[in-house]
Image (cartoon, rainbow, N blue to C red):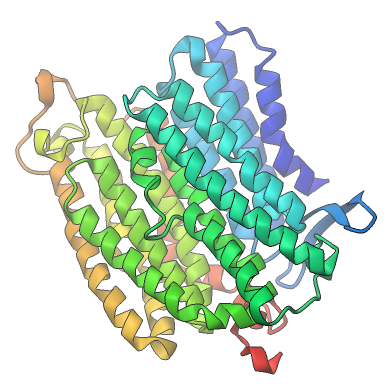
Length: 489
């Protein structure tokens, strides 16, 4: 029951919001935030699970030639993606109070809460049919938020780009699932003991990998990302970049790698090439950007490329560090996009060449921006460093050439993140249209504080996280199965 409570409480909250009069905005805000906070509080109960213990719930769903079940699970791999989702959702729903007109606030909050439910369903699904349903359902709230609640002139075009690209990825995933289930006759991950070989395994793995590369996104499947991240309101892009972008890499580790071990090793080289291309291209593109949201969008492309490198280096240190990097990046990206939203609200532009020196007018805003930016560039003591450093150490053991190339982008990260920090916070005070820049409101500081606290905690004590991820829980885990050579299985 606890898993269902965590998954569906945001959706239930959204339904309750629909019963509240449109004019009662204060009540709507209170109910939405309470629902998000309760969901986060319930999700913390999963921390009590032992390292080799999982919370499972299975209800038979489809029987006959093909078998499927409503099977949800929280284990060592899924735990921190669930916590990341519930924590980031609290911050984004709280931040949304500033980004919707009173007449549209109720719909805005309902869609954010529905989006949270689809993400939680995806990260807990242990049945391929259930996983696929959530994979496609998550597109609907984002599309509606872009078309109905974004004020950017390119939002509608960005929404269709987002839907078409990710819909195509979903179609590839569906074809792969149908091909797999036609051989196994079950959608249940726990009973998929079938081990395909040869062309069948290769083609099904390609279908899965294509869907996951588009969703992340990775180069060259990233075309939907810059316009979506640039056009979406800050709370929406914080959830998309902070949480949804982890779905593809999570699914690669939870589904594709254990199910198709031979194909994963066979296609490691082209996927490593795409990983390093994402790392380098994202870093170079970020360096050339003046739009602060687009800069952070390309930095995400670069950082998530490192996780692809970590997974396909097939080293136990790099795989474990890749999971840490995903959670760390989720916190950092969400914090950065929310901070950029606060800045744009004050100065009225995202162009770094048109303003600066905000730290003098809003020192608390400057401090929070400093922490988030330093975490993104990999400053020791913050979570970005812990993830990157361990990925590079692990990947070097098996893929020194690709790791050496990726190191170049790690250096470039210092350039574009310092450009962002200095362009917004330092230098002479320049504010367009003689605007008055105010200090952070208490609400803004409180909603960001847990994200920044998580960044600092994981940077100071990454061992706490690594001890609870699959590689730290014994050999008979997903990570252990992935790392073993196919011939040793």
